[in-house]
Length: 387
Ligand code: HEM
Ligand SMILES: *[C@@H]1O[C@H](CO)[C@@H](O)[C@H](O)[C@H]1NC(C)=O
Image 1 (spheres, protein in one colour):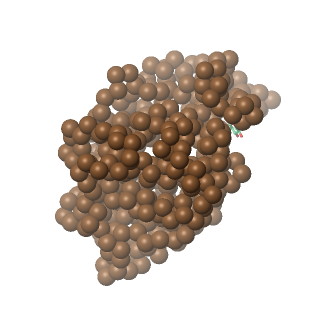
Image 2: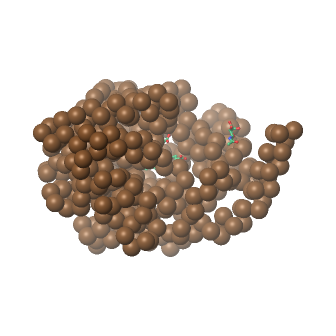
Image 3: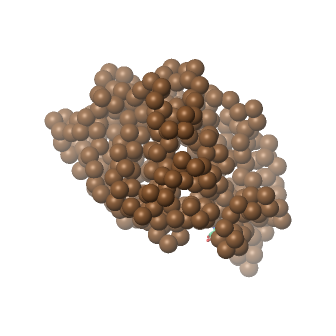
């Protein structure tokens, strides 16, 4: 009876709220975070997730000075050779807190592991949080801000971040410990970089050094997210261009996309493609049939693992699936179908060690995208607010 009541309530909520959602979810507009809010069940037609549908007349809102007027050509070689270096990575260094807060990396590691014991799915969540921070105005912890001085919507409220990017509470806990140990010293941006490393190591990446010295940004704007975060229906060319704008090559993109070896995607985000006859044609037959069954989405929280066989382990096996048209998200399949990317994947697939070595180099490069250093920005006292 109780269950039945919940289903009825859910159906009612969907019907009542859906039209509202549809009209409210315009690109670039504020999306209220309503805990427990239900998305459509799979009511007949296929699902197009309102949050991830591409905006019409897509525009690039990014007004970061180092990126202005960059046409971002795709030369196919993937070096981004003509791109000016958008990072100031030279200023970062390993052991940055050796004198000022020698316990910093240890504290991050301890607190994050406490969190993993309660919730191992936090590891992929933190990796994604780091990526989404770095691609929007650089690795400056801008994604962590709850408010910005101008009062405009912040990055975490943007459609592409809002509901599914998580891990903020674990970062708060780490920062609180650090402030108790060495107040005002360790930036939230570095906390994210260290926590990202620990998350990757937790999922099987050999440990590695993380250069530090990042400073925290003073602003966070939802409108900066659009155009800087890739979408699950992006074409290979769109992803390659986006990465080139950030100074990252085609090969680095292919290597990093292997992070989809861990974690999950939400049913409502991936379902549409498996029920769209045109798109279904491109998907491996057996996989398609299996996924059609699994993507009758029950609610907005239902998740599906990218790699059902080793969801918690970084494993180059993910490329096997991508090369066989068994991708959970369309963008991954699009990348696997691009000839250069396809060639790179074929090399990585049987080279777990080589892939992880390249992954470490690429993720460290990602961690240096457009960082603030020296006396730029500030060291926040709390990661959710500017000082
Ligand atoms: C380049 C194009 C990319 C696209 C289009 C893309 C898209 C997505 C989407 C749609 C999800 C599922 C979100 C959800 O439903 O909750 C996801 C999850 C994830 N992505 Fe990506 N992604 C890309 C690149 C990357 C990169 C470069 C990294 C890291 C280096 C990454 C790491 C992750 C991780 C770890 C998850 C799982 C999150 C979790 O389980 O909480 N992705 N991605
Ligand atoms: C959503 O659906 C999934 C799959 O049926 C189920 O496991 C989960 O408990 C549901 N969550 C909620 C909040 O109802």
